[in-house]
Length: 279
Image (cartoon, rainbow, N blue to C red; front, side, top):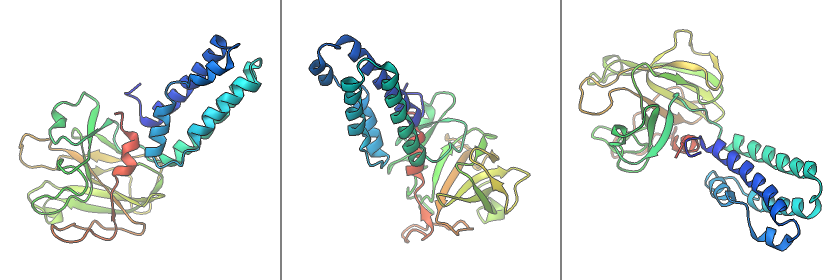
């Protein structure tokens, strides 16, 4: 279960809680008080995760209340109880769809990490979502020449890059390398897509040939592929997706110089990626 994205974990745990309620009705049919004392497992997990996602959670209390109603008024009507469970599941799914709005930008499982060397221990098909103050790929990490403006997701060269949400391409830029004024890196480009959340920059990639400014994209559409950015092998991954988030109306990438204030347009994308992590 822990290998599932957060949204699917929550929904699965809800279904298990509902299934356990049915078991309680069978085991304690004639002892209603005893059944009420045994809260279905997984409800505490659901409550914690919804709170972390910023969902105002009448849901936990509502679920408990509705399960009690199921026990009280529908002891002899399994179809009516199932209707309650399904109605609540649909309500929960709608809330999660609103809170967890992004599609993963790469077809890899995201694993939250603060360890800068965690890439050495990731399973095949996984990549770290860097957080904290000690990972050079994390948003806001202070480097020698600049403060990191986004998040680096280490990926093999050629990994597909996919849109996190619906939007419109507002810029295709030279991002690193001699063409961008940073000859210590290889030439890569960035695609900027404006959508519901803001303007998402997908950097250190080779854009898809069909993309032009004004192209409409859907969540999950292929925007290009990850391209090697580092020129020298220093024992760390040499290819990665660099992801930034900017305010609406932005069409350029701005450097966050060490010791200076953050560019006004820049936002932290970590919050939108954390719900996609598998653990």
